[in-house]
Image (cartoon, rainbow, N blue to C red; front, side, top):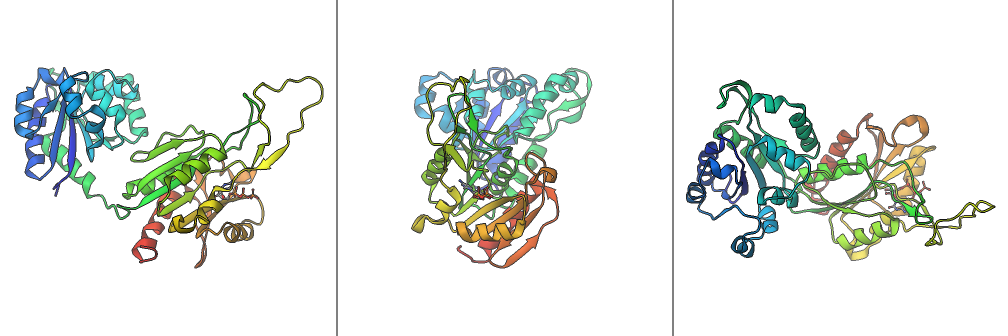
Length: 402
Ligand code: CTP
């Protein structure tokens, strides 16, 4: 079941650390490779020797160890895993993860990883209930972290309630469930654009629009969950990076185009960004001053990224998908836009003032493809992303461009 899967196990300080020894044994029995990082606290409860003997691998403990870094740097350690498991995840480690600290090997590997992270919290019941811990947890979960437990029961400290780390068998089941999820897009590369772009007028001002990036980020997350190797090229937004997705942050349309072209070849391209259509021709190095007449801005069109990807010749993605943001004649305009930009599918949405689409959580899509038009019900942007991702899977499973 777990044959060939690579687990990076981070063992932090807590009496429950002993359960990870059983976990390592069970993971190994199922064919997984287990590399372990033992924090200073963790080493108070289990010895490096037991962990090394059970995993059959060197145990990593020190961020600044010359031998560890030359054999296996902390970046490689965090990247050469399919899943990072933190067990037990102490209140202290969760707090340090939430603040993005990197002051030991465990937190550095966690900050550097581009892989999904599963935590099994273990702590005293009051520490668990403390608003600080709950806020850290909410933040981490919003960033896509996976969690199992804690369980309720008698705690080592003599109190009773939630805080016990789940048993090794439960943690193993959670790991197996993670690997069982269907990944029909595995082996395919996807590129998603998201958010607005900012086109500078001068060092402090820019032209932009009200795009939040919610839809594009949700699509990148949905494709990555289905196994696509996904890169998200995003303009400035407040959205958290979706788990499993590689993010390239850009500011202007020109930068977005360069980043997209740099990512080719990909098989799937979804242009969900609300690229600013015009940019000022000149960009003075000094702030424009209010000294009399308002300045006249001379504008020029920005590059059309969707059209450029559709016309990329041999490097054209097999499936190019655009959005049409319209305030009138929604479907007719979107159909014309699909023809003009030569993309395969177009998702038309109403962005007029009273639609609430821009910046909101809901979206009503008219899906336009060579097969015709489908009106989707109003649904959350996450649900739109899942619906689109399922259609992409069906497209490739149907043999089209596979
Ligand atoms: N798009 C793009 N690059 C641009 C402009 C738009 O990649 N410079 C993409 C968007 O990401 C979207 C599609 O083209 O997938 C349509 O964007 P939209 O704003 O609806 O259309 P525009 O091309 O800007 O046309 P108009 O403003 O006239 O509606």
